[in-house]
Image (cartoon, rainbow over all chains, first blue to last red; front, side, top):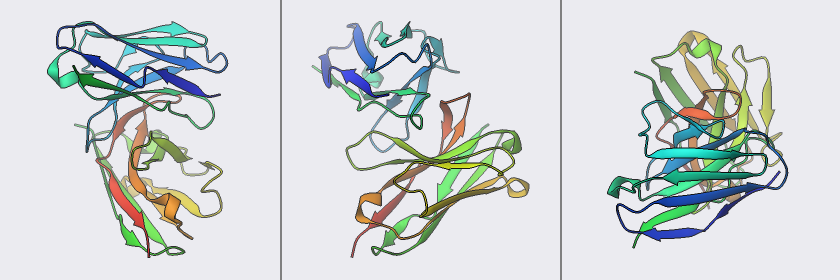
Length: 105
Length: 118
């Protein structure tokens, strides 16, 4: 199962809404997680099981989807949110997508 | 507070060996699956090796099977990765990671850098 993330780069201004997509090559039910990674840091778990926020994650982060199409939404992007975002699935050795870079416009 | 501290990286020649260590605290180490995840420069993370809570089951991605060995010492709350026959393509940041559920990782070490070069 291959995960394809889009877009590769998303340019937004603080306060805007970010919508990141992750598509699986076949159905993975709701077994999808999202991570945020900043330079020089390990990935940070944001969302698991497609829509459950991890401990301490702000409510502006939300996940949705099931089957093959998943979305991570950041409702009001803050300066600290500019980073690379990865989706990850439970199959094929817990494979990660190639990432979406959220950059400041 | 959960802490995962990985160490042991460095510069090694192709064909050489290296042993990574991970010290865990703040949770009951002995009941969780653990993993080593690596990230090559400019690439996404890749889970290479996993181990079950009592250490009796280990799983590896094809690219490292037969060269890397994951192990743990629950008495010391520690995870290890013995890497042999290292190749240039093994160059990466290696993270020790704790499984939070069936497939996702809820805590990660800060990473240790492994560079394979002559």
